[in-house]
Length: 287
Image (cartoon, rainbow, N blue to C red; front, side):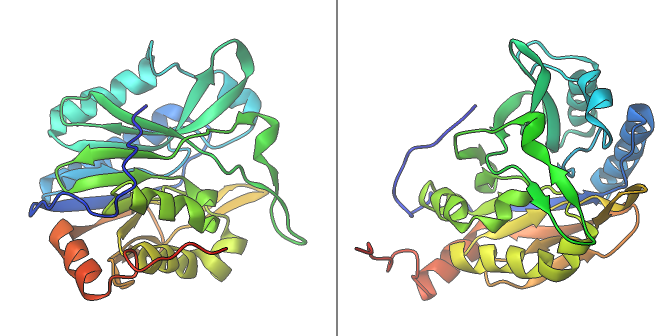
């Protein structure tokens, strides 16, 4: 896991423009079918120029925890799912964000981490982030979920150095906690990923507002690949995978269905906006 500890909001200027794809699909309990769909969509995105391809939370499996326990893998030792993803990154010569990887917890076979994994073009793991804020909610006539029953929380904010600049990693429910995104901006992030399986109920109310707010507050790109559609009788995801620019404008969006959208992420645009509206530099401590 990579953590950058700089407390400066200044970032190293990089003029590289990166073509980023957010991939959207509807995962179920069939791991093979899920991976085949992602491989197909990612191959198509790469053929259209995508250099960084991002996948949603729970990309390989979305179902009951008993089934999830059967596919848990250690990032240090690997396994068939990780190896397949690494091979895809190599074959496409693309960076690949595994939005929500089911990572084994050492010494506890009944629990896992919800982990975002960043692979470079060689398939190397450059960074991994374990979801800090776990989704424990009970909404009347809506989702009743208790993620912390089987999932262990992460503890560290994580950025990874990429061709576009520093990229902050988060997952889904994290988006409701702006302090994490302020921390990532302080660490130097120019873009932040929010791979999600946002529920249909909360997504319709809050998805766009939260993502645009995080982009505006941190003056960063927000990259949010998402699950869509019904996964079971009791679980449905909102979809609307999107990319938001550092001014808060949605520059790419896929409202529904399997697919992807691609947008340019330009780190110089981040630096320009931060110079013109220096809100990060103007922050003052509050007593």
